[in-house]
Structure formats: C-alpha cells, structure tokens
Image 1 (tube, rainbow, N blue to C red):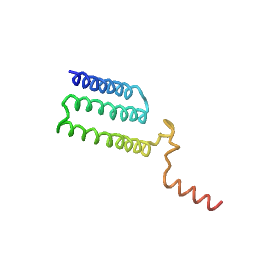
Image 2: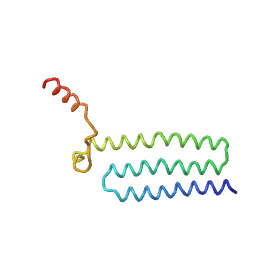
Image 3: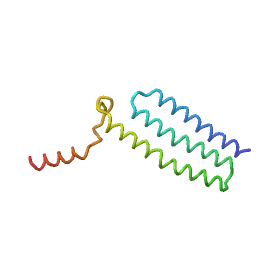
Length: 120
C-alpha cells in the first residue's frame, strides 16, 4: 500500500513537471529558451516517472531495465539539447539579435585574436 502511494507521488510529480515543461516550451519565444525548458523538464520529469515505475514494480529485473533507461536518458537528453542549441547558434544568421552569443567563440576568431596579439 505504501509502495503504491509512493510510486503514485513520483509519477504524478513527473507528470506535473511535464506539464510545466510544455507550458515553458509554448510560452518562450526564442529557441534557446525553449530548448532549455524542454531539456530540464524532460530529464527531471522522466527520472521521476521512471523512479515511480521502479518503486511500483518492486526491485527485480524489470527495475534494473528501467534504471538503465533512466541512466541513458540522464546522459543523452542534455547532450542532444546542447548539440541542437549549438547548431541553432551557428546556422542562424540573426542569432546575435535574439540572444547573446558572446560566450560562443569560433576557432577562426581565436586564431585572429592570437595573430593580432603577436603583431601588436
């Protein structure tokens, strides 16, 4: 009985975070804000839902499989979101008008700065 209630709390918490994530994705205007809301919500909400399923099924081989899914999603979701955001910044010509891209430095810019330092 307690295990069922605890599992329901985890699953409901995950579903609530998914709802907040959907609201954030639809509310924000810029792609980087949307990707941030989606990545954070996706990782945490999926972990809560899977933890609830692990608790509900008990600790057996199925729980191990679900735990492996959690570990895979924990590492792959932020990495894929980061790659998508980097692609957006590099391919969007108007990126500097929508958001700050000062932290993202191109290798050619670094080489040019080093060349200017050595010359001057």
